Structures are given as C-alpha cells and as structure tokens.
Image 1 (cartoon, protein in one colour):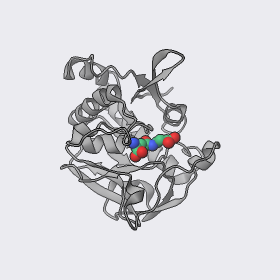
Image 2 (cartoon, rainbow, N blue to C red):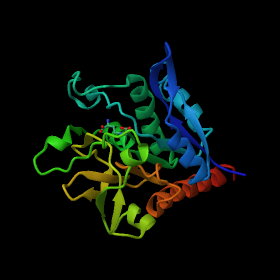
Image 3 (spheres, protein in one colour):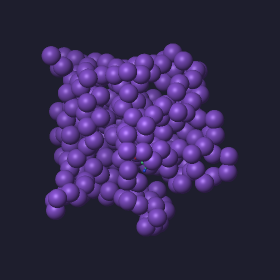
Length: 255
Ligand SMILES: N[C@@H](CCC(=O)NCCCC(=O)O)C(=O)O
C-alpha cells in the first residue's frame, strides 16, 4: 500500500467549451509508478481560495507537493515585468494557486519537487525573476522543445548538466554530470533569496536549485525527470528520493 499522498496543482485549459482543471498524465504517472506515492490533482482555484487558510487545509492532507511543467509562462507582473502577447500564454489561475502553495509548502516543511515551469514558479514565489526567450541570448543553447509529433522525441534526452559537488542533487544522483531533456524558453533570471544553484548547462542556464535550510526535500529542476522516470536511472533516482521524503514526512506526521 502506498503510504504517502502528493499534491499536483492543475493547469486550467479550455476544451470542448469548458474550463478544465487538468494536469498532463506523465506527472501523476511518475508519482504513482516511480515515486510510489498517490498523486492528487489540486484544482487551480487560487483566486477563489481565502489565502493560507484553505491552502493549509489542502497541505494538511498531503505528504508532498509536485509542481508540474506547463506550456504557459508565469505572469510577468508577479516578478515586476509587463505581460505581452508574445510572452504568453499565461495561466493566472494556476499562478494564484501554485505560488502560495509553494511558499506554504516550504514553510511547513513538506517535501517539494518543482519541475520545469515549477522551478520557475519556485523562483518567482520566493522573489526571483525569469529570463525569457533564452535561446536568443548569444552563446546560449536552444532549450526549446524539438517540434515533433512523437513525445519521445520532444522529451528526448539531449543536454548535459554539470551538478555542484556539494549539493542535494549530487547526493541523489551521485554524479557530477547528468543527461537531461529540455522543453523551455524561459529560465531563472535573478535567483531568489533563499535558493542555491545546484546545476547548470554549459551555457550557464540554471537547471536545478534547492531551498536553503529546507526542513525537507525541496528541489527544483528545469528538465523533465517525470517523463523517463521508469527507464532513465537519474530520472528514477530523483523521483524515488522525492517519494522517500514524502513517505518519511507521512510517517512522522502520523507519529
Ligand atoms: N513557461 C515555460 C514552460 C516550461 C515548461 O514547463 N515546459 C514544459 C512544456 C512541455 C511542452 O512543451 O510540451 C518555458 O517555456 O520556459
């Protein structure tokens, strides 16, 4: 029996004339099959929730939080910049849910794994900024997703990251380099106070961060370990470490 429950905040999507609270299956699937926890999708009702009261009621029922990737960008007004049509699409309902949820998850010492848009949300939630269209910066790699119908190609592993020797990520992977996938056009710009850089690609783009002094597992990664969690060793180790932290939290919570 799986002993831990992990919250995954949903995106909002318009489909078939309805607004849906939805999350790509790969996150729930990796949580269930690799982290070995029960995933629970949290609707993006942030703008209707009454601040931390209802966020706490959600967090009291879970043992971990996984922040997923998404094609939408974090609203630039949340880090002091202007929204533009070129910078979108945005998902204000997801931002209004996931940013307070991230802050409260860290305060309460609940394990946190933030993936792709998730690491960007983590940085903005703690006061950092995002750089956009990073492929246009001279000398940068193209971090955007390969345009292909086959998701195995879009999520193909194609970049190397250098992992800091003294880091949570190194403790998990036991390697100074790892091969990862890449599907983003933004990245951490100014790093938030309270985050430490744990890995970068060769062009200097921040690929992993940890939360300083975190009471539990609290990592953000710019790539997608969930996609290959059942076949790629490094991806599996990361999901497994997150699952272990959620189980430990669950055991302590239940005494
Ligand atoms: N706004 C971010 C989004 C990064 C992210 O989460 N990408 C996953 C999307 C997967 C896909 O494209 O299918 C950015 O672009 O930097």
